[in-house]
Length: 341
Image (cartoon, rainbow, N blue to C red; front, side):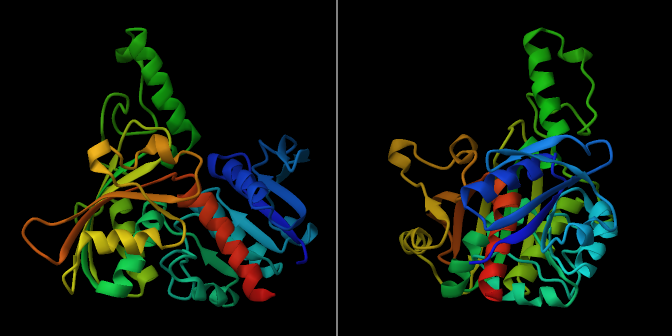
């Protein structure tokens, strides 16, 4: 296998840092690594494969200058909107972790365990979109169940960690908790969230739309249908919780046919990158603390509805910085290489 020139845009951010770790773990075939960030971060270093690599300023021509072949973007939608086309024009395949390109009809939205065949469409615009963090872990579970039983409707309530809003959001939770134990919580302001996050849950992620759903909820609903390539009913309520890493989801699925929970467990145990943790008698079920820095999606509390034989309820947890971002992006890159070679 030949090696590739790789760039990471947003190299000093929470997801960017995680991308470097995942690339190292999977022994990604990197010839040259080019970390890219804003002018303020340029000149600093990141560690990759046991050596310090200087962070370069993100510019329109840096992709051509550095002969970048694979560009992993995770620096915000406006950054991707401006710079991703320059990377694509320079000949790189762009794997974008922001929401900017996800719903464009000619840009593939990919979860490799679900729709890897769509990666080949990168050639249309040179870009592959990485889905929303909460969407990724859910569709990984939905896909094998849909293949066998046919999904009609999905209802989701999420419990999303602060890291989904970035480093500063994580710091805000920590600072508020420290202030609580110092009896000074009332003196601490909230900047990253609309309300205090410590000792609280906030039923709002992103801004509200005209229909009173949040932008995050609309993302989950629309992205799920695009990834599964199926016009099913999807309804979401997205909630921010005082957890650092790991998104959790309570999911209810209505199928076209009757389904047995034990059969669903068997299917999921045999699915790629899914770990079933489901032993109620021993209080065994997925939790954020269990999935931190893991590359698998954990599912448990798998049970039949008490009233309808075609409804299943389950609980999904995954590390949002990994499964929901960095790991999925790297897996897309791996699959891209596999398809190209």
